[in-house]
Length: 121
Image (cartoon, rainbow, N blue to C red; front, side):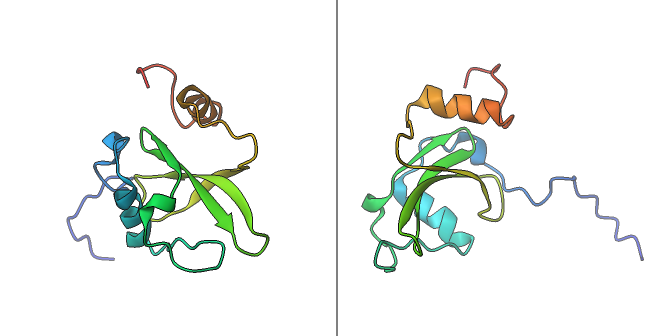
């Protein structure tokens, strides 16, 4: 194979600018998922275009967001990394008794070794 002279870093596929996205609006979240081919639907399977129906929380470059599994109509909180070029879920939790407190979300990320406690999250 011919060397093209292009040197890409190992994480070339990662997007840029997602390390300060904790202040994203609901519309920005819909756009991020839409840019990656993910369309949100409601209980009836209709596309959600009104972002008022979204529930989410962003910690650093990770988003916890409520998703619905249409088959079983079960709501889950799903974790995604925002500095990725695809919407790939890391983990999900049942919404029942899920704590949306910032400290609890940070602890989940810490336990999953996705963030370090140092650095003042």
